[in-house]
Length: 111
Length: 115
Figure 1 (cartoon, helix red, strand yellow):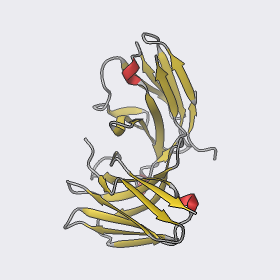
Figure 2: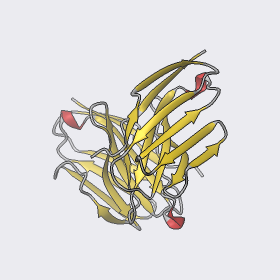
Figure 3: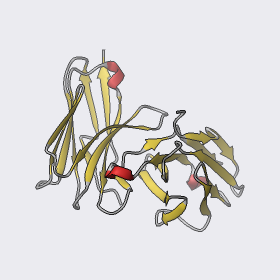
Figure 4: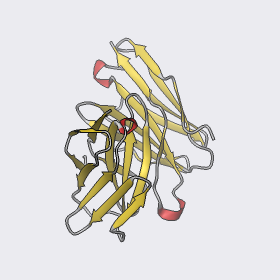
């Protein structure tokens, strides 16, 4: 079953604006990861945040994690047309290496 | 490293035919995953191997699906007989599970169309 649920399902913004995507999950996790998928391609890992971390940065990406609310957010600052893609959150539970993916947020960044 | 390699990239077959999808994981990775992606169901984990041993195959839809990993550098996913509802993009991913990171690297996928 899908654990992560992204919100919104689709997001359309202009270049230069910030994009925020949210992810909610149901059970306890070891870590939460965000992936990007360009049309017709495989998923690419963006960032991982562990359950004992609250915030993490990587370039223009900022991820937060609130384990009390079982939610995470991905912020892309100063978006570019090349950021157009689907973004997925994935949760990893303890003991196994498997990930459970949400259905993703489709981001469209217009020039 | 070339990344995860999958073949074929596209496969069109008729209902009832056998389909074999192939995957070469990243060298040194000890975990391999097969996923299926459709618009309706999203990304579903089919089976997970660790050190060439199937650990969790609860996502395999039915007996028509089988997967093998004869060695650390090769895995196959077979569908026999194929049905139109098997049409999807099938991804293989690999990861190195030391260090408790679980980051996965995906191949480009095989787009399967069953007519």
